[in-house]
Image (cartoon, chains in turn yellow, brown):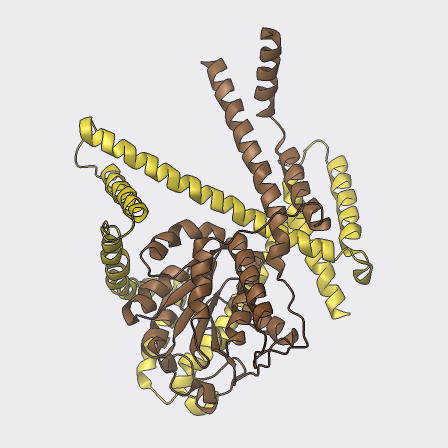
Amino acid sequence: MYELIGVWCIVLLTLSIFSYLYGDNPFYKAAEHIFVGVSAGYIFTITFWDTIWPNLFGRLFPDYVGAGFSFDLTYIFPLILGVFMLFRLSKKYDWLSRISIAYIVGMMAGLKFYVFLNSNLLTQIKSSTVNLSGTYFSIFNDIIILIGVICGLVYFFFSKEHTGTLGKISRIGVYFLMIKFGASFGFAVMGRISLLIGRFEELIEFSKPEYYYSTPLTLFIMIKLIGYWAYKDNTKPLQK
Amino acid sequence: MTKIFTNIKKYLIDLGKLDRRFIFILIGLSVLIPLIKPNWINIPIKTTNNSQIVFNELNRLNEGDRVLVSFEYGASTKPEIHPMSVAVLQHLFSKGVKVYTVPLWPEGLMMAKYAIQEVVDSKLFNIKEHVDYVSLPYKAGGEIIIRGIATDLRSIFTQDVNNILLNEIPMMEGVNRVSDFDFVFDLSAGVPGNAEWVQFACDEYNVPLSSGCTSIMVTDAIPYVESGQIRGILAGMPGAAEYEQMVFNHLNSLEKNKYMNSNIAVVPGKATSRMSAQSIAHVLMVVFIILGNISYYLLRRRTE
């Protein structure tokens, strides 16, 4: 029974989101708000019970929480910083939240600086070099990558006007960037189609008699209702 | 003759003004028809080099090796990533590898549970929780959690997903940091994802890493693959389909495997059956892009 209710909810919410392709309508609005509300509630609950409760309170009140941590008074500082964040809601004391934000930004900047330098800068520079011990094809590939890297970097060099030779090199950099954006677009399309396939597969599955023809029935009712709303509100057509 | 060309030109320009809802319907049908009638179109799947590298890397693992599988995707990206999760788990369990799952996204917790459940329910493998796999709970923090796993896993995780203390799980003995794992496999759909695993853990501690990710992430991850920081990559649904095929062939080729139930048939995964729909939709998209560009070019010339 609960599974069936879940199935009908899945179908209704999926078709409600798809209905936006026709135009903005109450089904879409309802599904959108439910999605935001449920996501926020789910993330809040899971973060509290899986992280804050065991990892923070589990160290401050180890016997009560029983998460397997021993008592550690230093965890009072994360608790205070966390409480400070909530002061963003107060006009008078919102300056306290800046202390927490400053800590997060400072800590992440320090951490990111090292890992980015190591993994993205040094290793990527190393991998951009031409390996002359490879095959002719790999050497050719390496040369293309090296040209692409240099020309791409020149495009982002703004201290000198992009004219003459610098302009030509920068132009080649633009072509490399365009190829990258084109590939990204292609992959983005592929990803979106994959998601559509996933939704369609479930809708097809839930069209079966064991689910009481959930998809066709919901679709029929929705089309009727959207048509009715459009007819009643014909002075204000559906927003495309 | 000139009149015919003028008419074609007019039609092409008018095509640019086509109501977008017709395009939606056509894309919908191009996906729907191959899914309803899979026998009508059967496009063969060719294994790409990056998928083959992933397979070879995991195939090189030995019995008892420890693999950390990180789940960083949710319901919205499930069609792309979930088939590869199941295929990767099948491959690992067929080799007697110990699997440790960790979700870094709130929804990853459910995805890890569903993937493990799907493999357990198939009854293809003789696997038991806490003997062959351990599921760690979700912890908020993203990169910080990855860093924590890299340096001191026990400072973050003390219990598994069922609130069993890690000290009481024999599989967890000697597992304290990322370097205690023989391999990390990342299944990601965003941030934190494979880039964060490279930066915050695997590069510094020299732990081999492979990844399966959404199509949209591939172009950003490729530099890491080219440099060897990520060993191969499963790129979206095609990557999942390729990997499923390789695992399907691998499982069928195993004559006697103590980890598998020989009386259960190996069935192909879900991504394989979706590839025809994907390919047809791509062809249609390419046609639309070409026609749209011609229409735009002609319109611009006319206005100039």
